[in-house]
Image (cartoon, rainbow, N blue to C red; front, side, top):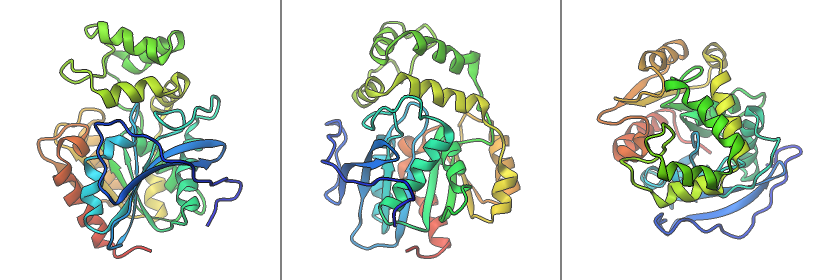
Length: 296
């Protein structure tokens, strides 16, 4: 099934960073969606139980799920993840980075691949995108997992998001990365323990600065839509790391309460349990999806 007005055409496979190794049942490719070429990771298991769509967060990419996705696929779920337009290996489309556009891309990817009743998961910023997509008229999601994401704007320590916006309005992504590489004490630093990770570096440099600025705007202007989610009747699952500090844990719990959602807390994890504790994360996700029955 193809989305109205959406173009879908497969292209040659995209080349992943050499540090990201894919299992034999996974592939990468680009697909034309709504005027953009979106880069996808696609894990297709032999035994098919259903489909899961993973949506990455702010300054992230599909590779954020490279540890988690195979563990889910091993349980019989096809797993797809794409780079948001303007991010990493997806094409740049200046002026088309709104929340509505990013949410439309999520739905259009599913329709272009002929998928329905998909388990949708959004991590961090991706949770806002996934929530918006799930609430679109005619959306056919089987469930929504809000993964380390909150109801509205996140905790913005020291005005970090606005600082980044100002920074990127004056510098290219390459210039910004090079500056951060030499000024890790300047308050703008995405690296862990001061180590430059090749995947993080490449996806940052390949992204569109205007896309990152727009994503920061979406985060800063986010509003609570928990009541709408509750009214939709869509099964919701709230998952976060024990030490997640991007949104207050109490706010994430409140979303669960309003939407009547189960809460899964990943022990010894922060904002990215998909990378910190992938086995434990896969376990709680698959357990929830299995409880809802087999998908098409």
